[in-house]
Amino acid sequence: MKPYLSIENMTQQFPDGNGGALTVFENATFGVEKGEFVVILGHSGCGKSTIMNILAGLAEPTSGAVVMDGTEVKGPSLDRGVVFQNYSLLPWLSTLKNVTFGVAARHPEWTKSQVIEHSTKYLAMVGLEGDVIHRKPSQLSGGMRQRVSIARAFANHPKLLLLDEPFGALDALTRGTIQDELLKIWGGTEQTVFMITHDIDEAILLADRILLMTNGPFARVAESVEITIPRPRNRTEIIEHPNYYAIRNHLVHFLGTRSKAMAGAQSDKSHPNRPQTVRIDKTDGADDPEGRQPALRAVNS
Amino acid sequence: MPTLSLNMRAALLSILLLAFGLLIWEAAIPAQKLATELTEYERLTGSGSPKAGVPPPSQVFAKAWQELSNPFYDAGPNDKGIGIQIGYSIYRVLAGYLLAALVAIPLGFLIGMSPIAYKALNPFIQVLRPISPLAWMPLALFIIQDSEASAIFVIFICSIWPMLINTAFGVAGVRSDWVNVARTHELNPLKTAFTVILPAAAPTIVTGMRISIGIAWLVIVAAEMLVGGTGIGYYVWNEWNNLDLTSVIFSILMIGIVGMLLDAMFGFLQRRVAYVE
Ligand SMILES: Nc1ncnc2c1ncn2[C@@H]1O[C@H](COP(=O)(O)OP(=O)(O)O)[C@@H](O)[C@H]1O
Ligand SMILES: [Mg+2]
Picture 1 (cartoon, chains in turn yellow, blue):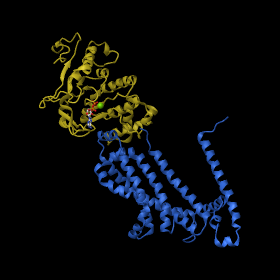
Picture 2 (picture 1 turned 90 degrees about the vertical axis):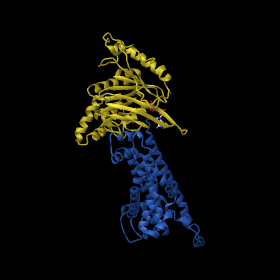
Picture 3 (picture 1 turned 120 degrees about the vertical axis):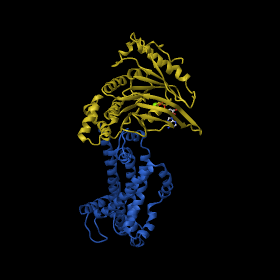
């Protein structure tokens, strides 16, 4: 049974400027289930944005395929909403119009007032109400702009939501608030989310599963780490959970040393590079067969 | 001590400079008027007579008052009100300019969107652009056989380049992020052009339009001096032939004022389409 979103033998090469080719990643193969919140974590330059652009349909891989819900991804679609790192709001439109722009594209049959009502609702969900929504993006703070961008994406109910380091440019406090808002909106939907970040705590707070990427070139999605912390999560409570530090240490260790150690290895070309599943569970109830596995079983394999 | 705002002080300074300039001008003329009390010999040889024709500002103002209080009279081919003459010039400028915009903006869009169209058309643009618009006049007169249409053609050919180049430049420079927003929302090419690329490139395009209208207004005066008949350029030349320097100076002022108004219109448009990233 194929996963909802399936990335199959995806290889990306770019010209390296000297007539040769730079292989960003090779034969990457992984899946995302419907309704899942998957975060991909890796160092800058390893190819995360390249993967996301391919999933969005904005770029084509050198080889390999992306299949979503049984159909191959070819070109961008309203079914795949994107929240760009730099917000990508249209600066000549007001906040509200930046959202109605997308909603009207999604629902051409709606009346103007329906479009406005729907857009206003989603702006309110991310805490933008009243006068603010008639301002231009240049008159908003970075946090508010990212909220608009999230509202624009959610208002369209895409089947897959792609977020490229959405909070990278925000200060820690604002980032925390918007993470909470994102969790709140996501919680009420069956939305499948694929998000890029380089912030470990953000990844643990938000993800069902974290994909770990080694450094490039020839980067690999090496591990798929399940976040065995029940929802709803809350940033102050999750750190009390027995699994929190075990997972966090595993991630820190990966990004700190193993992502480098595993980097640059050209693999057997004919085989798909699948991530290894890692499940870390130190709770008392974890006495099912899965839980008896050594907690960090993937570390030296 | 109450301090005036910067704008107020600047306006005050402007008025002072104007008053000072007019005063000097006015004061300089009577001395020359005295020089008109010339000897019979000097009058015969004509020495000093052009100088004697330079009017004082008061005389120019009187002329302006007289002309502007009845700008649209028409007393035959050589005696039309200033309003009619300016009207002819504006009509030619707008006709040539709008035709140019109709060609330049879509073509600029194409060049801006397509690297191959840019490369293919660039050599032509580079050769045609530096040609003085008046150099086209003989060819236009020969081919079109109509002085009116030739003047419009000259305006067309001089205003097309800044609009074309700025449109291409503005369109090519639209941030790929914004185009990606259009793509992820499945906008068709026409919708993308009008809702994303046009507003994104509008400030650059309007800057080109503003440069073009300025050049068109510069060129129309020269073109009308050549083709004659009507228009502010013809009017200046005609009054020079009549040695009516008061009218010449008055029409020079009018050319400046109309040019300023045309520019201000596009300045207003420019502020309307501007956005802050
Ligand atoms: N269009 C491109 N042309 C050439 N090289 C590119 C291009 N896009 C990305 N790269 C290279 O691919 C690698 C991965 O880039 P990217 O996906 O942006 O990394 P990340 O998002 O993980 O920081 C980098 O080495 C980058 O220089
Ligand atoms: Mg990136």
